[in-house]
Figure (cartoon, rainbow, N blue to C red):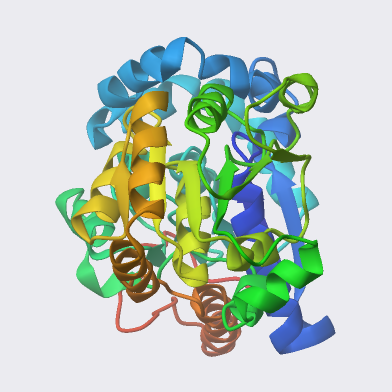
Length: 401
C-alpha cells in the first residue's frame, strides 16, 4: 500500500513525528508499506508558501509575541474556513498536482495547515482517499487541525480530544494515542543510567543536567545556560545546541565558573536523556514527550505563545516539572531539584506516568488498517467506514488516484 505523509519543516517536530510513524510502518509491514513524505509548503512551489519553512525561525522573533497574536486571532474554525477559501484560488491547482504526483491509498497530515484544503481538493477531484490527521500539539490545539471530513483524528491527550469535540468533531473519529516518538526512545527507556553515561563518556559520580532548545537550539537557551553556570552547581552540565552553529561557537568560546560540555546536533538524544537527571528545555511537545518516555523531571524555561502554553500546564499540573520562564528562575529551579533527591525522583515518576512509548506503533497500525478498509470498501463499491465512524466522502471510494 502507498501512503502520503504531509508535513512541513516549520519547526522540527512535524518531520520527526512523521518519520517516527514511517519507521514503524516499515518495521511492521516492510516493503508492503510505501511511504512518501512531502513538505507541502515547499511542494506547492508558490511564493510565499514555499518560503515558510525558511522564514519560520524569523517568524518566532520578538519572543514569539507576534506569533502568539496571530495564533489567537485565527484560532476559530469559521475563520480558518474563510481563510482557506480566500487562498483556494491560489493553492488548489498546485495542491492537486502534489496529490497527482504522489498517488496514495491513505493520506496522513502531520500539520494543521493543509487539512481544510486537502478535503476541498479531494472533493473537487471527485475522489475519496481515506485521510487521517495526527495532531502534534499536546493541549492547546489550533482549530485548523480539526478540519471536518477526515476519517480519523489521532490526538495526544484527553485535553486535545476535548478541544476537538469543542470544534464539532464526532467522538467516534477521535483516538487518544499520545505523541509519536521514535522507537529508539522506546528501546532506550530501560537503559541503565550508568550504562548510558558510559556510552557518552559522562561522569557517574555527580548528577547530569541536560539543557536543550529543540533541534534548532531556539529560545533563550544561552541565557539559561549562563544563569545556571553562574550558580556553580555540583553537577555535570551539558548543553546541546542542535543546528544552531552560532550558539555552539558562543558557548564553546565563553568562559564559565564550572565545566560546561557543549554539543552540536546529536542523533542519539535518547541516550543523552537516559544519562541525565534533569532536563532543562523549552516547552516543545516532541521534547516533552520524549522526556516522559525517558522518565525525566523537566524545567521549562520558555513556551511559544498560544500553542505551547498548554504544554506547560500539562507538565506542571501532573507533577512532572517546573515552569521557570526566566533564566534566573530556571537556574533556581535546577538548583532546588539538585538539592532535593526525593522531589526529583517524584517528578521523574510522574513523568514516566505521562509517557506513551508505543504511540508511533499504534498510529502506524491505524494507518495500515485504514488502508485495508479502503481496499475492502472499494471492492464492495461502498463508501469508507472506519471504527464505527461515518464517511463524509462526496464520491465513490477509490484507493488510488
